[in-house]
Length: 569
Image (cartoon, rainbow, N blue to C red):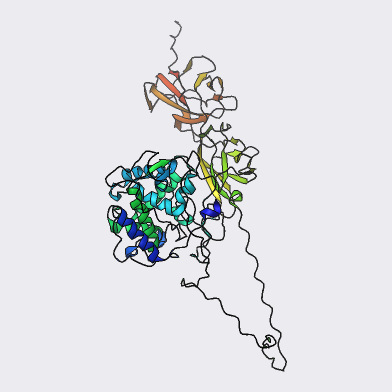
């Protein structure tokens, strides 16, 4: 089947006259297709006006080979009838596999919602899909729309085709030397990097998935503000996909054919192309075939070898031995090439300072075919200033992926500083894949704080409060160590503005302080510094608030001692 699929001609290899005659016959037997753009009547060419849908005027396919089969001359339906015939209706060639047809129609709807001015018809995607891959090898896709093995064009090594050196490390095409067109819509990797889409919502942009590839093709064809209902814009779009007039004629023929009617067939039962085998001429950089040199005529009795150049002192120099060309490095097969690194179910990464994160960072590696990749080293790195480390006190650890492609880092231990940090997973060497997770450390918290005794706190004006104040903070019933606590002296807890008179703490210089930032000890206890009264008697309040919102209010009283009358003489 693979050999059958690869029987394709390079662009412009078929005879223009034969294709033109077939198009003329097709037009005579059914409604005419939209006209070709003026000037696109023969030979390979750049997209009209030099416009291209891809980066740097590159064709989406790299001008790789394509099928040259033309549609049957008998139309699938009579003029004016439906283009959505039931499955049992129409010729075999008019049938499009169910998943492939669904992908084209979904792409049309999606583009219509984001770029309605383009007026993309799904039949154009069907025509390109037919010419590029025979509708994904006759619709051989799984339930998600992915081909069981990649559809790959030949290496674009300049040997009869364009020369495009590797741009993806072989991630998509399994070739780390040259690029190849990939998937049902035959994108070269560099174009896919710009235009790739995730149309089936699986979190991956996969050129071997018909839904992803069809939407990418639709957006590519609509690039540059094209209106595909205008013949000139449609021609430019198709030529930007593969810069060959022969290609344009073939796509146009299938486009007109599908516009006349088509029907759905089961996946895997589509008709495969029957083009002749691909010729493999040697070509010069300008695209002309290099003639094979004719051997020199032999002399009677055999050919006498020509002597080598004479040495200055006479005699003949030996013919230098040619320097052997080192063999090319073998290209790793797609199964051995890292394709992607994805989240394997890691949830939110949050923890309290000093605690252990409940979630562990986990990734899944997949190869270029999308299958899980085992025995792959994955390096996890913590970056940030919170002091968070993996178990064992390391900032970087390397884990080998398991049979299901997953690699899970050790547990994270939160540092003492609150804030955000990241964990980055990296795998692969030629073209590394990375995945970054956001994480955060929150400050230690307490949901309750209470005094450890209930003594009344009373002092005379200008004196120190005799009794020390000790409190305990807890979180979910357990001692809350290292919790930040703010102590503020106020006149009224209902109006918690810092007081400017009454009880106070003292700083190192003995000056009054009425707000302090404190921290509970390892047992959740907090012992307040000494409190002093000034000359203003009255009732005051001390409010203590923890990180986490727990609050306690302590009453302080400043009163003069009662005067006693002197004894009577």
